Image (cartoon, rainbow, N blue to C red; front, side, top):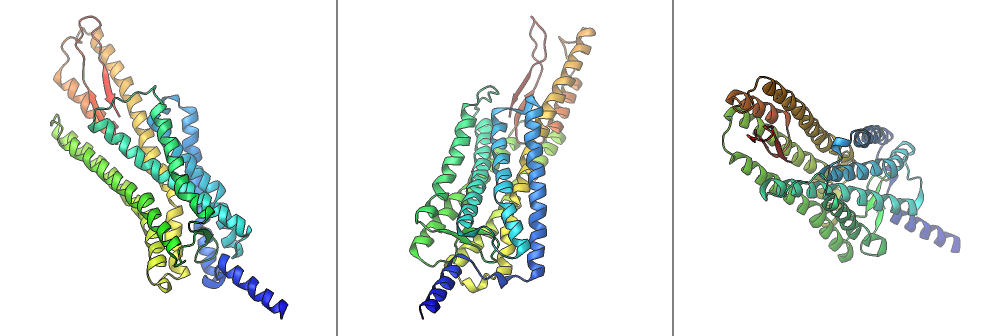
Length: 369
């Protein structure tokens, strides 16, 4: 009898920490493993490439781009400390590193994921402050960037440490090969945590991004029409980029958050292991999408500035050689403006204009980005 009771107790404890691994078929686990393998490889390659670019090109090591570097580091951390375990679990169709490993996996993935989301929101606010509030972009002042980075980690720790100390808890997810907050627990303790997590780590960042980029677009539309066609092209590119940012952000995280809310407050039977796979994979795919949308755009922007500087230097030398600097032609100015607006595809408050100084007769570039 004692042995039987012990077996029952063991079974109950196991069911509390490990879901039914039969929720997915063998082909289902194989499919999940394939997608996780792709995310693992692309996430590592993309984020390592971004880190390599930061190491190799000194020009892009600006305070603003340090926030992007923080995003890449957090995304890379997910790929290194999280995805390999779920990938291996999908191959073997069972969780391999025990209950403590499951708690670590849930905590680490939540921590790094929220760091990335908060950093993206802070990045949108920084661009908003630079463009609309006339905040000077100082390429030598890294203090604000480090404050943003420290805040993103502190904020994430505030919302990911509580499950380790009793406010909700980390455990296996529906299909048994990943771990996260245990959404299906119907208790006031767990429900209150999930509501706060959903509100402060998903809804508020989305609203902040939407507000900041919406105001930026309004400001750009209000700028004087120097060149109608150029302005329209620039605005369309900015709109496309902003729509991509918000869309992929929502695509990656809202389905996961919705499933969590249904599992907590709705009919949990609606969330089958198969249905829970897609939102989980989408959330993990943000480690691949983030570098493509943000780092690539900003690196392209920085390269555009460097190229524009080289072109302006060449134009200045030609004008100086022909003694035409004192009265630059309107067509030359429009050419510079046209080229600059096409080179800079991200939201920026950029003005390129000649300075008619009698002392040095130079062409200056004023850029706030």
